[in-house]
Length: 297
Image (tube, rainbow, N blue to C red; front, top):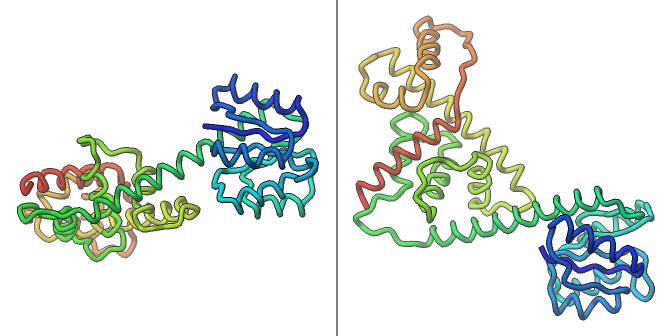
């Protein structure tokens, strides 16, 4: 990460630079002792983050931020202040300040805050990259010899009885993302990354990614439970049903399937909680999709 420090106190600038350098948090590409002097330097160097003092001569921190925004600077700001004033803090957040560092400067606090903003910065840009990648994939033409990933996934979801579930659309987007990755890995990345990739492909605003990811997880969980119920119903009617024989042992633990089958046989109104493994289900769905997709490639 590239930092620029704006503070009229030389000691504060030195201390912040030392914390950044020794903590291997990035590089300090410039500094200024006032808001007015910082404007041309920041606009020419375009740092990722500007650490800026709230109270300075000529232009204070908030006024400097306003000037930089008006002139097209899109970097992020971290305010340095020893004043705790709700109105000023609120105004700073409105102008785009990400976090506050309190004076006197504390090494642990600075290190912690800069790590947080760095993680947020990387997540944001990672999601933008995923979104751009998915947009490119969306526009790519599929040859007549290929069966689309969407068709393959929907056919599988139809076989297991959940094509009408809300989570089925999320699964289709997830499989499209996995199939079109540049690497050929067959193991799933962390579920959190998958949910965020689907959320990004839904054109969700960046600030809502985490909220949408939770909704996607819930929709997929409900769809998987519906698949378990459907397959258990098939097995309860006919244990030799080809769809039951093929899909049930692949997507679920047979012990959980048998529990649900017994409940169906007894026609019980009370159902026991069964355990589902979301990652296993999606992993199997991914492998099934790869196998069928490669047949048509």
